[in-house]
Image 1 (cartoon, rainbow, N blue to C red):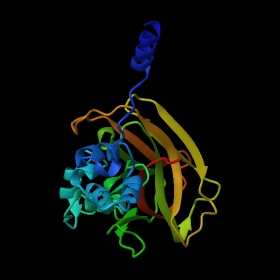
Image 2: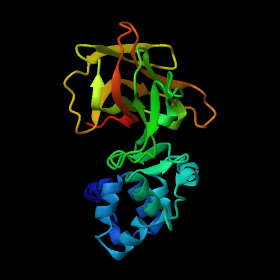
Image 3: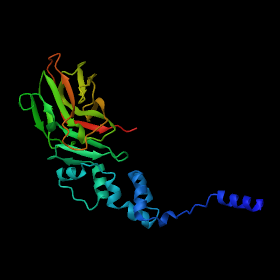
Length: 272
């Protein structure tokens, strides 16, 4: 009798074996949930595993997860108009960067992180005296995606300001601000001249650095990192007016400067 009770207790205490389902037999909704937890690169790799995986990997539901909430708005603002047949195609088009807002900005998604990046053309910046033809003029060049660049003829007061709305960027992301420019053959007045670059966050915190541009090559675009900032929290709408402001300035010496070509400013997510 005692042995029978012992055998029954042993029988009931043993865990029941798990029923393992073949991964290929999972419904598409379950596979989609798995894909949601991966990256675009992983989804592309999984697409070659099976026909069922391929079907899920090409679905709009999966790729919508990797697109920012602004993507429909960006699609409308594209130049030329962006025509795509799927969310997957839209994602890869955005990763290659597109012109928006009458060609005055560039928008892209970082392919590895899906974070948002922008480049503002010179026309999107506030350049002091830029509308006075004695000091600046607007030119076109084949080595820029923008139709117009600002060319400095001669100024003693150099000041270039720009800003970007915080809610247009990706939350939880570190960014850096990069000024893109070059010097032409008429460049003068830059020798041993410190240029101030600054970034001001919505909370009023400001960082400033000085760089000497002397010796910069004239046969290619120069990129100078003005500074970095973090987007910790972003309101889930486009009505948040808070902006990150940035500036390139030299007003202390009143020295006359010339021969600078401004392509624009890039606001790009930092990648590790």
